Length: 278
Image (cartoon, rainbow, N blue to C red; front, side, top):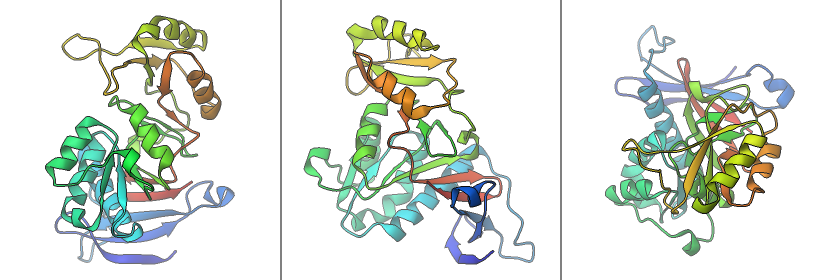
């Protein structure tokens, strides 16, 4: 094992060091796992503090900011996702906004947060290249396939992710699963087709439920569509199911990100932030 990156920025009062380890099965898959451990600087420096889920999200958001600052050239355009962990990444990048030409956002909510920090938010049609897209996941497996869309932005997320050079997924350890499907699978649907699409999703073995707001209204995406959340699916072949659902007339997109999955996972765990490359 080798140690690198001592002194990296971490939570207040602690320092970080990155230790390259082999995860179970990593030798077979040919990839290493870098574990960034935020610890005290005293004699008990190997002790890792127990953290809440929100603290783990903040930790991986900062790790993603460090990754971007180390790997993305100045003047580039960033791709930015949607959700609570993506919000923390936006906050972590705010002091460095002058280094970048701007960001392409995957939702109106992220656009507002970026603009609130003074980022230039660009239309994707105005951008030639996006080196990296950073976003969270509702679930991710050990191949980098994900379920996304719990925040309702799955279509724009998938578009931005598909054109980015690299997808960096940031998540806490609870999101890493052996098989996708415990989290309801979001499917964005043209409103007039929702009943027809629901029947076909049921034929695939799922139980589709129309997403509603807390106020009891039908949830509407930024694109003016509705979402069917599908429960009861055990997704053993994510790429196959992604293609099947996307082929249903009326489906805008499904929240399976298997064809364009994560390239890098920064995973917050009680032993630190693990980096996994796919």
